[in-house]
Amino acid sequence: MKKTLFIAGLTDGIPIAAGYFAVSFSFGIAAVAAGLAPLEALIISMTNLTSAGQFAAIGIISGGGSYIEMALSQLVINLRYSLMGLSLSQKLDSSFSRLHSLLLGHAVTDEIFAVAMSRPKKIRPLYFLGLTALPYIGWSAGTAAGAFLGALLPDALRSALSVSLYGMFIAIIVPAAKKERPILIVTAAAIAISCIIRYVPAFSFISSGFSIIICAVAASAIGACLFPADEDEQNGQGAEKQI
Amino acid sequence: MNHAIYLLIMFGVTYIIRVLPLTAVRKKIKNRYISSFLAYIPYTVLGAMTFPAIFYSVENGTAAAAGAAAALAAAFFGRGLCTVAACASAAVYIVMLIAG
Image (cartoon, rainbow over all chains, first blue to last red; front, top):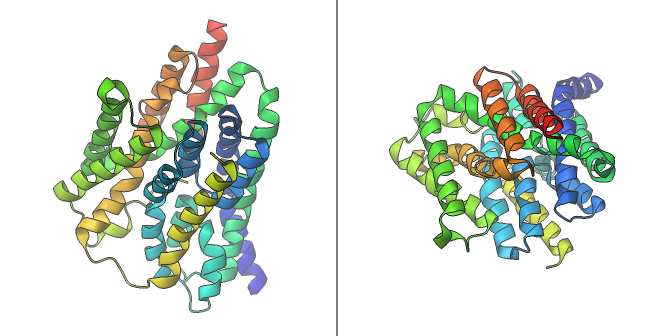
């Protein structure tokens, strides 16, 4: 019974792990290109397990951003995990203790959250451990491979791989924007603000990390005022596929 | 700036964000404005991170644009995460090979 729970989790984690390996490979390459040591890239992946936050962070580190900028950017970019944690907490089995949450909670990513929520049963600790094990290994191993071996790849291939992370981001945005007009409008607003900050010389003092914070907070606030979600919808949104 | 401190901040903030609600809060967010705000955050973050940055992610601007276009097209036609990412990479690779 216990063994099968763990194996059920492992099985559900396989496709996530494969995707993570590919994406974190490009993270490893990007981190080294931004001036980080390969070991630092690996430590970041092993202690964070999140693409958007890590990706923003290497920009801040290479740009010599302030510690406050780092903390704020991680807070804003990863804030969605709080929302997921809230929904997930409703689905935990009573055997899932606070200690389990403290140890396993850090492995909540968009994909792991989505799979856990789609499971028809309550979540037990062993299942969750199994579910997170392979994606965690895939994310760490991919980062190490990209960071240590990325330099051996020819230029064209390295460039090609470094764009794959953005490709994944687009793969998350587009289906949601197609399905729900508010998401389309809100995302377009964020992109518009991002372009303004990038191209209007008066805003050139704003660093990339703060730019993301400003765009995300402003556009999401506009969205919350214009299109506040109905009670029932609020759990599903934001839980779309994404690391 | 010390890299180790950056790494500590990243881990600390991300860990607290993830684990705090899971361990401490067991009630639902009732305020629809706050919950909507949180629901839009992933998309606005990713949108702002991707554009216009994707066009500068590769030294060859044409290749970067081709990658963005390929990803948008693949995503629009309902392809999955890995396929879309692979399409972007393939487009960049092909343009860079042609450009030499």
